[in-house]
Image (cartoon, rainbow, N blue to C red; front, side, top):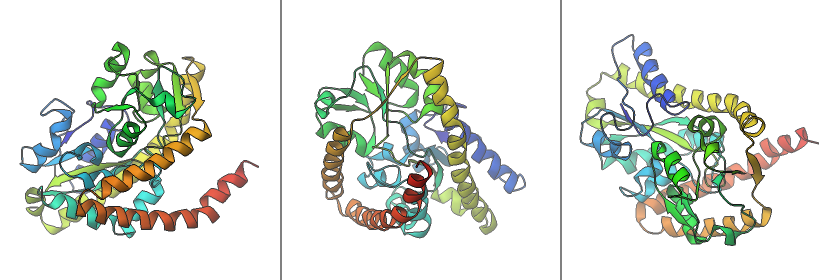
Length: 324
């Protein structure tokens, strides 16, 4: 397994390790998975090609990194103002999302699977205050996927960087801001040493799905029972990573604020409203650029509308009641 994450990086890298260990134990040792961190075998953003051509059998990353391969991939990681973690899992497992994902990756000889979720991410680290959308103009920010396209529409410059290059780029001034994940991961990277303001919410990544894709030829060589074991190990890993982030993010956030003096800021409502309008435009335009993206987008939007209506009377109303 090759990954986009630094070796043993908390949450993401350890999530890949845990998946490998789970496959080993669930298979009774019949499958052994060796995990390579970013740059150990191939570069962080080279893992898609490595697994596609069979250099490695498995890859662990996030689908929005492969926009250059197929635009439709972005919808299986995170969509600005899109689905939460719970909603993403529902769409993938019971709303037709997984079948579409498999269709998208089929031309590359890959079988995709959800292998983790960060939950709602943070808005990012900034070296200047964001009081209006105009403050995003000219901003060089590490932001992948559809969120990066929205930033570009707002006048900023999105930069795609693997995790291992973020801190030095922010510290040196090569970028003005960055999003990464959330407190748990951001603390581990020491991003508080390179930026003053920590904004929320992560409008661009409301429930980011991590992926494990498998070389199709290698997978199909496995006997049927081991294929089932691998697919179900992914499901277990997917749920466990979300639980891990949920358990550790608040403690890390308090440490960032109380011990490291980070200034926690909420994006102003008018900024979020304007970004939401830009997001709707950008995502629809991106989807219209090719038939497969449009097909995935239509499924995604239909499910989001359904989820919004149900959660208005369930999750959202309960959370509102809990804070009365």
